[in-house]
Image (cartoon, rainbow, N blue to C red; front, top):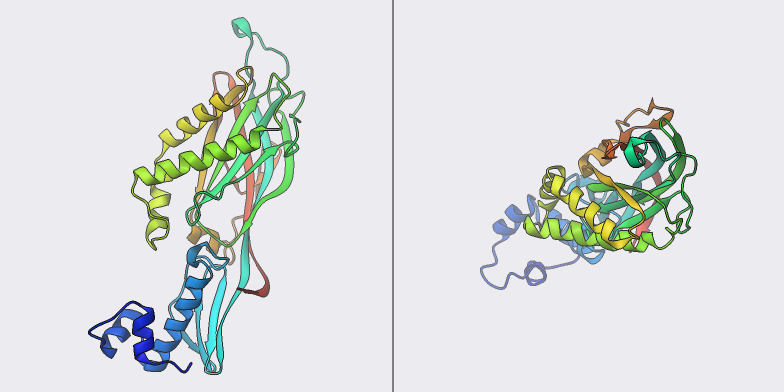
Length: 311
């Protein structure tokens, strides 16, 4: 860690008025050795895309360890020693798993008479506060196919066990949209839903003045999404405009899980429970339109993984 105060000042954009105490205060350290370590760790963090990296957001300040220093993040850590450059390692990940769909009631035909069984499908989208345009979309059943759930009537379960998102613990929005298909042509909807979800999520955050590169943006993201009934209705209308008019968009619901909650699931996992034959620990509110009513179920957990370097 052979580096001068002038080098630190230049790399941090400080050209005049270089004062060691000011740097100590800014970095919250008490020695020049710790200042150098914190500067080098922050530089490494910036080089691997900051919050968008597989480390995510910090959960500790600089800590002194044997022969060096480290900073802990939700997904891992960056460590540095006197004779070694900073090393970033991921050792934790969060998995969001889709566990299935339950039908509480199906759409009625003309005059309120049941049209028989329904053939719904559900689109699940996951977007996160640190990279809002990076939306993961999967359709069930059969991602990338024209499959639908067949012979679905009141009280039907359609269990699944598919991991839809594996990432560092982050604040996320999970959007479930149920469509009752009359055309049997759904294979192209995933790309359309991804576009609609990404565009509408971005618009909602921009209207709220959220800059996702800011360290405080995550809490604003959670507040906007939690309060955004308008977001769900906009999304449902946009999806309806994208797909064939013969298909009926029942609606969308959004689950918001904070990054802090995701991280805490490592040491305090949320227990699985059962409802209507489904095993889950997170679920949407009812997704409804008239007589049609569905619920989507998920399992979310955070686990330790073998540490591996991030470059």
